[in-house]
Figure 1 (cartoon, rainbow, N blue to C red):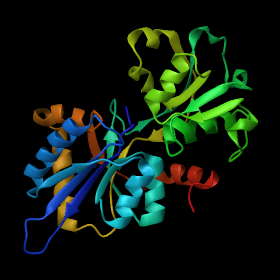
Figure 2 (figure 1 turned 90 degrees about the horizontal axis):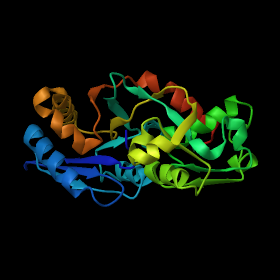
Figure 3 (figure 1 turned 180 degrees about the vertical axis):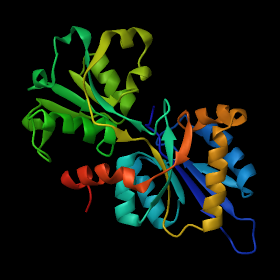
Figure 4 (figure 1 turned 180 degrees about the horizontal axis):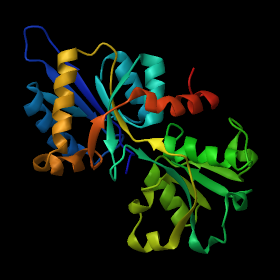
Length: 277
């Protein structure tokens, strides 16, 4: 599960015209091929032109939803609950990995580091993925709270020697694997972003509680018919004939309709850490 990217879909329902569906995909370069492929598929299925674009980060995607520049966004559970609170966003679909719409965050270290437990990281350096990442920050940080090593909303530097936001799973994992930091907090699948040799050289020493998997959300007030057509198009990706297209949107196993109640734990934790205004 590699989620450095944010995907946002823009739908324009222009009276008297065919309309336009704009798809924002990603936070960085190198995604144009993905945008073109999935945009073309959605355009065919929904019956309106689809345009793909990128934003710098999750915060920018939320602003795009707020401003009406984006209508649908693919993002993590934590950014979703923030978007829900701030701009009235609605969760519509959840990604499925290995049969379930859940995953975990882990704390990774190098095998030769001598670090065996969270307590061994006192005074050490850790790389978190992103401040708006549930599996790359919030939930792994909570493992230190549950271990009695930190208090909720306390500055992580009260325990660590240094704490960084690396900018994504891959960056955090590479910083740890190459010895720039002692540990990395990232998705349970993040070690797959390392080379085979690096994978053999790292282990995880702690795992978070289950986290709702990444989601597809719609902006407040999105046209009901267009939203329904989008959901239908996305659910068709579960069919064998369309499975290859999943690699263009994070490579999940598929999608299921989302249950808003599943995110109550994320809402509570985000509020406890002051991430919900």
